[in-house]
Each structure stands twice: as structure tokens, then as C-alpha cells.
Length: 252
Image (cartoon, rainbow, N blue to C red):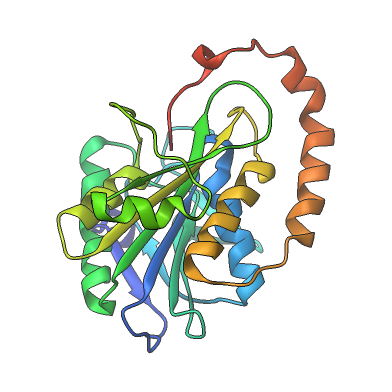
């Protein structure tokens, strides 16, 4: 039982040789946009798993209580996973879990910050969804850690909103704040999404923008097939939901 109650920790099966890499983060959130995008990016570039992130504060998204997962009939703690590509000089953090208390989010950011120091990460790129409660062609917005990045990132077909905007909930925002407080650049990409079901169409858009920023060539055939399958499955449910931005209007 002791292992289940340990502090938040990151374990490594091996340590890839990378040179000031980018950390790309895709975790579960609004429309699971970041999670889906990171999953397809991993498959596109053939990234390999090299580590796991454990936390006693990880809880199942559908039931806010601690749980143990069963994988091929064997129990294991809830975890997020780390992948890498030496060719693309990239680390990818992907998973369903973030935290369950405000403190646990900040503690997880602290551990990820230590990992960034370990691998000398120079850019943190987080992906997520911008819930607006309506369907349509996704628009990709961005928030960065310093104003000098705006012009460069805007060239990748993303929008920067004027005035006070937010909140950016969870790890997507906190990791950009981590970047702002260090010598790491930080970029958050969020695609607009209806928000109540998995949205690979929005995920495709943030994946394309991330690939453009990182100069990575990707194939969209697989995610295009997922878009068709998901939209056919959720079309009737989406049409029954109330329309308008007030239905869901936060970013994660």
C-alpha cells in the first residue's frame, strides 16, 4: 500500500539523448482535444515510451474517487506516460490524469519542472480545447509565455485574443506559467470545440499547428477516419444540446 501513497513521482525506463528538446503536453480536458492530438502525433512520428508519471492525486475522470486500472487483467496505478523522439528532439507527456486538488496541480507542475531541468527543455507546448458549446469549423487560439513569441506563433495560423481572457484551467495553463517563470518558452494551443464529447476535428487542428511550429511532417489519414466515426456517433446527441457560448466557455 505504501507505493500508492508515495509522493508524485516520475520514473524512467531509459533516458533518451536529446538536445534542448520541446516538451509537448496533451492531457484529458475539454473535448479531450489535447489528448487526441498528442496520441496521433505519437503515432505519426513513431515516438517511444520511456517514462511514467504517478500521483496519489490522480482520479478517474468519470468517477471522482481513487482507483486502480486493469491492463490485460493486471492491476497498475493510474499514470500519465512520457514518450520521446530523438529524430524530432521531442518529449511528449500524454494521459487522462491531472490532479484532484488545487495543491496537487501545483505539485505536479513542480515535478514536471524538475524533469524539464533534467532534460534541459527549451520549449513547453501544451495542447487543449476551448469549449464554446457549439459545433463548427475549429479556430485555434494561442497564449504564450512572453510577448516576443506572439508574432512568430501567429504566423502558424493561430489567433491571439485581445483584452483579458481565460481561465485556462489545469496543467495547460500552469505549465505555460512555469515556462514564463523560467528560461523556457511556453506556447498553449487551443482549438474551439463543442466540448461535451471527444473532438478529433479540433484535435486535428491543434496537431497541425503544433507540427507546423515544430517543423514536423505528419499524415492525417488516421485522424480523418476518427473524425468521421466520432461525428457519425455523436451527431444526434450534439443536435439535442442547447446552443450558445454560455453552455461551456472555458479552456483546458
